Length: 435
Image (cartoon, rainbow, N blue to C red; front, side, top):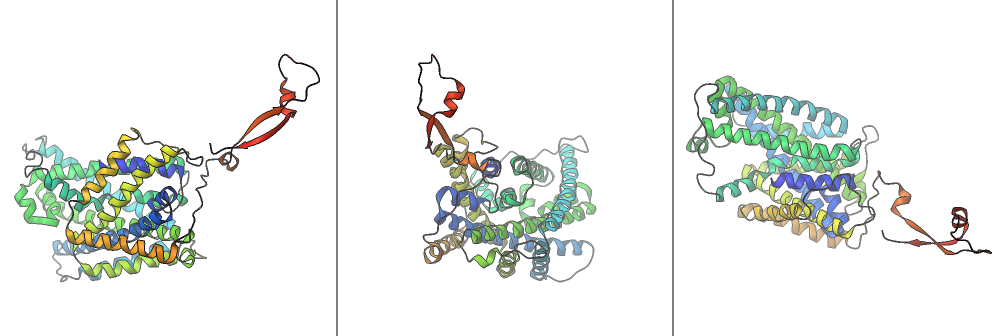
């Protein structure tokens, strides 16, 4: 529900500011360059950690799949992750269209596989197929673990805001961005709810705890046998690969936006002559991903990514509240968040509350990134100014409105009512106003 609220706020901001950069661009134009660079660097590093988490998981899924096929390759998880990071970096350098095609194909296959499996599991849980096996009551261990785990796995919901990160490259952003944001979150919510419902129907809580990260594989095995385990492992490969691909794509666009604004060196915004992609920015994502892979701790990778993005999401909700209140002339969103100001306020508060439930180590990593960003701002970017957005759906002349007021009417006769022609030719002046 937090993700859905943030998606609604992001949809409003993205239709008013359809430019590359996503959360960074929204926050920098609303709160200024200091908060912009804090969020920009946080978004970049957060997606680096997320990409490393996805690629580490990709390596784990691949090795488990090979083991299911009776092949024992040892445990080169990091090597698989490194190879995948290099491959995805190359795909993104070769063009946004290529990366988009890979993403679309993978996600269509993935959602199809998971939908079929989980719908079958729901039918089985209600006894339509086989015996009735409804799950145990919600939150049998209390509500505290619900918040703790939500904070841990929030990295699984990072994808929707990445849509806005490439807003400057989307066709008809007024229509497509808001639809893509909201529909993607609704699809993710549906699949995750089905996954948890089916998992708790098939296995007991203690069994799920024992299986750990591979629990969903055992759930699928219980549902339809060994073929189910293979199907979920393959789906896991697709999910982690596509997530890493999207993270590298959007993280590089954040660096590109920071560079265009002059908050980081300008040479980072260079575009490849042949492929038309910000290749230097992409390298600045791919190389740190390779380095972070050696951390190897899945929980720390996931939580650090989640923490940095929860800060961004909270400020995205704050942007909607501030911009609606100020009524700036350039702020004309094609979509408006319902329930203003209550819904954005809930998103703002809830995001920061989840951070409270994170591990100390993850909090330290996240704080280090934010403090380093602040130091970099004062050392390099202090005093920089940013241009206001130029929404393409607003005629440039309308962004600087002028009100025509008649000052004097050079009449020789007394008219009951001045004619239209006389009004149009009368002496006048322009009153330039903010609104």
